Image (cartoon, rainbow, N blue to C red; front, side):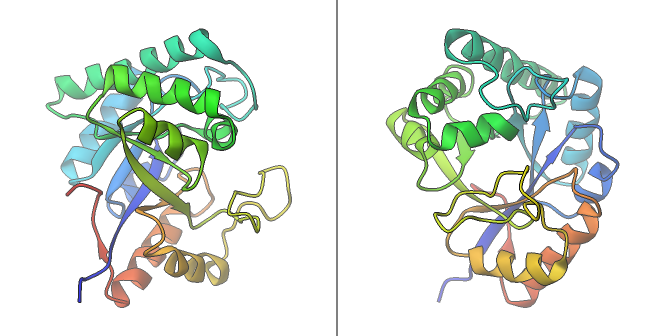
Length: 236
């Protein structure tokens, strides 16, 4: 019987205090590259630490909305958005190249991710930007979404993602952050949710800006490994 495996990822380089601890726990990370957060200094620091910890790196582009931390829906669309995403992804590629690393995936951030779940036109813009900058990379997104459809239509690998620290609606989509209880930090909720997602998704996200993120990530990893699940980045 095959040993179950899953990736643990975190969104990093966003100015939060847990990055160094998280990079000792997760197997992949998504690095802010100038849209909602991040600059050359933070990208370099995050990539350097990821390399030291054997963590796979990816780009975490967003709506170019630093004031709203990329969490304002419908901020930009079309060619203007595509140009911004390409610029962000290429910025991370350039910094990584100087350090001898290659990003393996792209995961949209915040409102861009959520908007694209049900918006095929927006999902296609994202997939197009990924294919132009990193044609061999994977696009990370919610399973059974327009992001998955766009990736498959655009000849991209797709990595289905689940969230251990976010509440889900009955239709499998995330509860909006504006709703009380949308962000979960209780291990009584997080651990069983993480276990229930194994075998249904390829990667589990632990948000780097959630209070106590490193403690949550450590508890999730320990719980999964106790159950015989191997933690490994997708493609490794």
